[in-house]
Image 1 (cartoon, helix red, strand yellow):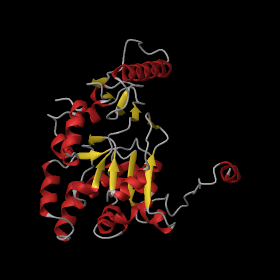
Image 2: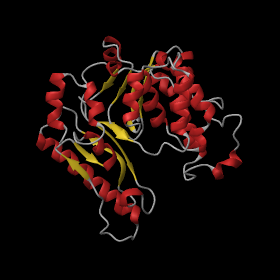
Image 3: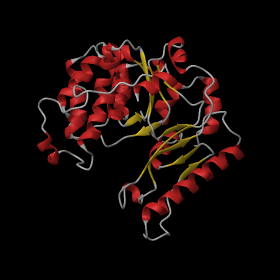
Image 4: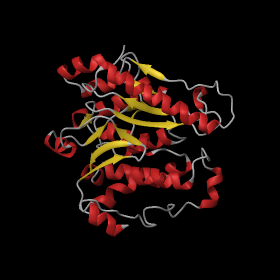
Length: 316
């Protein structure tokens, strides 16, 4: 496998993770996992969350990397990106970039107390203005199935101290506090908005389908549970976008019938479709409407010209 990669894609390197980066913290035991919150999530899944939240930064820093971008194997970029994302981040002094905003309420018991304790102990970690802005709505978050970040920010105080406190709390394992929550909290509290970038100029899809007989909000098996497809500003005509979203719906409904295997065929998916800009589940859409709770925070990332253009894509 390694020889094949080197022969055909010499710029690609595969790094298998050893047990240092994919095992339980020393004070947790596998036998305890039956008592952990949301036990349907495996220990391996929690290893993944700890990797993206805590361990990825020192690992890549030690290899000499300065930036990292995540793109999950079930994430899709649907339109051409005509510039170098890393160069954009460097040239514009951006530290963290995201594509889709979301409300994330499932933070786990003890998370808010842990964050407040960190802020009380580390009074110089950030400004009171940023703390106040964060506490207006702690649950505004960044979907981090796509993100791009400057590694050095997470390697130095106060972010490194914060991440260490999070890791020592074991909430990632015991409460299933996700890497999405960790990223969003650390970035929102410790970075001023001018150092955060909301990418909106390419169309992006990450959509989790329900794998249980029924998921939250009445979502049935095989239907969109989280995420969806976001249209980039200036990408596609309305007719092209309609064709793309129709194709997505047809594919999901077809795959759902295969999954159902004899279940009632009339249980169609509930799709959230808004203003020729998004199709998918409710969680991302809740952040994209101007009258919803995310928008007062998100508009900080828009200058006047961007706000005018983006307003066409953000429904009231």
